[in-house]
Length: 362
Ligand SMILES: Cc1ncc(COP(=O)(O)O)c(C=O)c1O
View 1: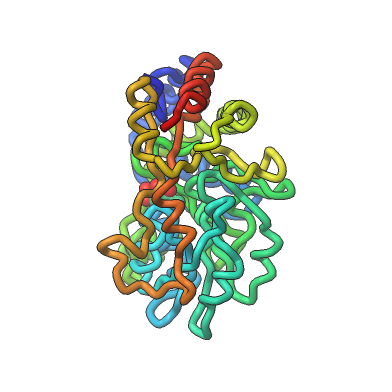
View 2 (view 1 turned 90 degrees about the horizontal axis):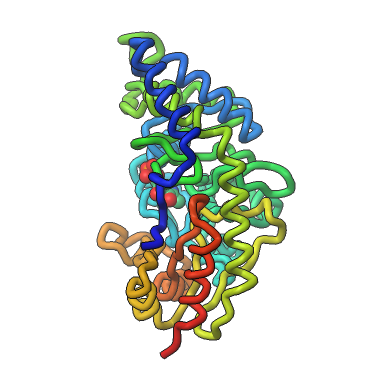
């Protein structure tokens, strides 16, 4: 079976480095908010080209904590996309703010600026851009907005636009290090990156019960701390990130060149290779469910990201949307399919996936 991920096939050297990191934490006898977290925060901030990184419990908390650290909460609106992990929208709700959903551009499945413009009101405090599937696109357009920009980078570790990293454009960038991400931990983990001293200081307080000093709490914070074990593992994996992203790009380049089937539509290619890290390689097909079964019968796994847009989720009822509707997001949700694209795939695996996709017919 060609799977969407294959951690067991990762290089033995990486595994050794991760195990050595875990041993280092065991030997230190210190498990929460210590040197490993500080070291990883520094390297991650440097990698992203930002002054600060704050390690937190997961990607959803990174968004919530970032918004709260900016003072965004009850009475404020945050515009975002319905075509994302539900966590992006829930984080806005958890911060006490009101999510508003704009439509996506069909070519990329990323937020459509014209639809976002229709959603802005006096109450809009931020636009949460989601760098879906690993794509960073047209950032100068977004930076021209009159409203604060914040970035959900959970799928875009290492993606760049004009040489600048995902996470370095908005007031903050929020990352998930869920195990399958391009930089993944061995459990839940996340971080936000920012140049703002104020946001970083507030985020550090909020992640730790709102504490300034031990047992002194200035606001009702959360328990959302990156732990030493995950931080040490992330430090071991970080030097591999660019290499793994490069392999994803090689596989994607083959898919773009070799998938030739009128029933299967590819998303727009990135303007430059650095703009995409292919956390997911996504195609669209009107007969998506049949295609999924066809691949499964040939021992090829595929997944749907995401089958139900946020406004059609049970928990998303009543969310205000672009008055013109979210028809592109709805169509994308009906037709999108993620096919295997990860650094451990061999060239033979890629051959098999291409052949199967090209053989698919009615
Ligand atoms: C776009 C996006 N945002 C947010 C999240 C939430 O991250 P986590 O699962 O670490 O809370 C995810 C994770 O799947 C994601 O893909």
